[in-house]
Length: 324
Image (cartoon, rainbow, N blue to C red):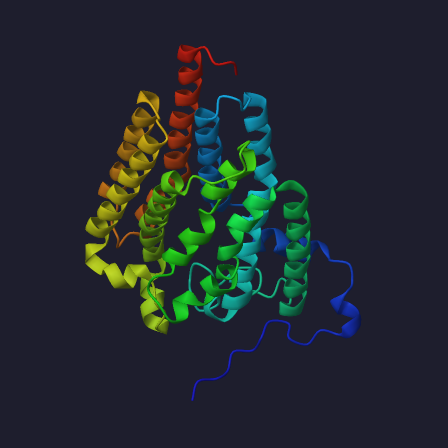
């Protein structure tokens, strides 16, 4: 019979539970939020920024200053969402993380913070996040995000029972596509026919980069019998991810067409496609370093697309004589 895994620092005195955090615990909280690695922020904020740029293009009455302020407001919100998801992921996966080479030195597995103190920190994040959201988001934007809230708790469990974890990850990370538009639009509504294709396209983008990323842990996942898209796709990973990347770019372009985007937008999509397909072509699923390299290009892909949206909106206003 396998020996049970002891919980890290499972015996904490009642007085210590609510004590002020030590310097080591503060560092552990920083690590729980992945504030040393902000790819998670980019993949949450960029789709929101795309949406803001789209509504700025579609609604001449919206000023550039209003769009920039909204984009800036979403920076702390998206850092908060990303940090919250990373923390709950570590809380629910600490026993698995200590068995995987890449994750065994994370804060909870190595004992830098106790489980109960980490849960307390998570509670603080939830309260702070709800307060920030209630005070900065429109009601429509808040309601648009609510359907994915349960996924925050479901996603960390996925590797225990399904190979399709990138699907809920994409659904919750990319919901900003609806929030950005609804937050800035003077009409307060959401053009679902325009944004839904982009939302599902962005979810395909998540499947693309996450499947490659998970190959870093594939051998450990096999050893401890965890599920992952890397195990599901195996040697067919690059062709499958190429197909999901094509789907992403196609749906993105389709949504842009419905929003009457112009040539600069499509040039941005084409440039992003070059970066994405070049990364996939260079991917060796048996090389963790190359899988990581492809994953690290993810923010650049989204940033190029954002650049296309922004330049397109600026060019459109200049040519049509619409004030900024």
